Length: 93
Image 1 (cartoon, rainbow, N blue to C red):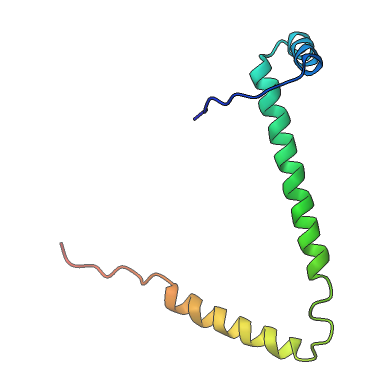
Image 2 (cartoon, rainbow, N blue to C red; image 1 turned 60 degrees about the horizontal axis):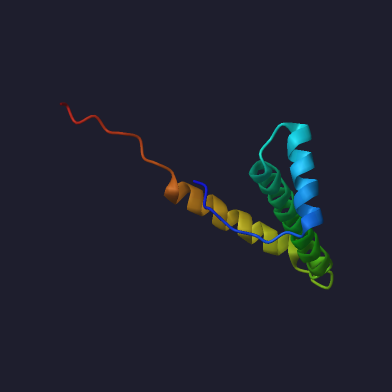
């Protein structure tokens, strides 16, 4: 669902936007939404990359990783067995 939003543009921005929209045979709103979508995607990519950089090496000093991951696998396997749907039992109806 679209929501109406009002923005302020400089005269130069408005003229450039109008020109782009005419060249691409799109509305100015479509051009703005496309630009906002690209900005959001780029911002999210940068945020993800920053988090990855911060996380890099946080387990470098751990010497228990093989055991740690083995325990995680064991817990996941146990949980999968518990969460696994049971076969339906015929009720005779």
